Length: 188
Image (tube, rainbow, N blue to C red):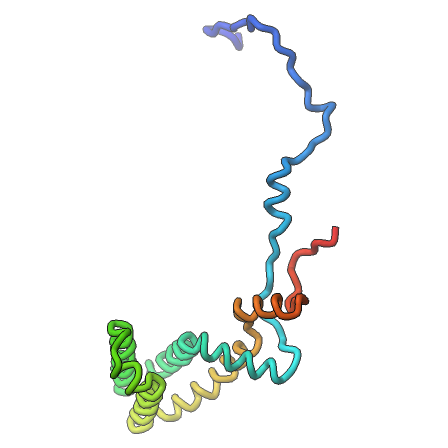
């Protein structure tokens, strides 16, 4: 009944069917090679000396400064939402002015006035001071102080522990001994 309405073909050539039960399993060599050299590294590490911690803070504040600033700005923005609407509007306006200045710097990369005469750090510091003065004048200075007091330890903690890819490659090239421990063990 199971073969009702079907026809079965009888094979015309007799090829021996190899049984794989007698042969042991052997994985393919290219796949083993592909995953053998794969190591994961954790980019967080405690520095060995206070000097290396200070250097790491300076390097990370330079490399990740925009992300740290956005982190503090978001916390301040959230803190100002319930009570200080005018301060919130002024904060948004100052961040808009800062964004326009940074876009202007990118739009004219060969401008002598924007890049040589007027220092970018000076303008950004001036905008940060103007934002702080506006927040103090609108009576949101306590929000600014609490936000800075809560977020700066987190920023410094992250900048001490975070290891950049550049620092990883410098450690490997300089000493031959890695400061980081690999997550996989190659001692088989």
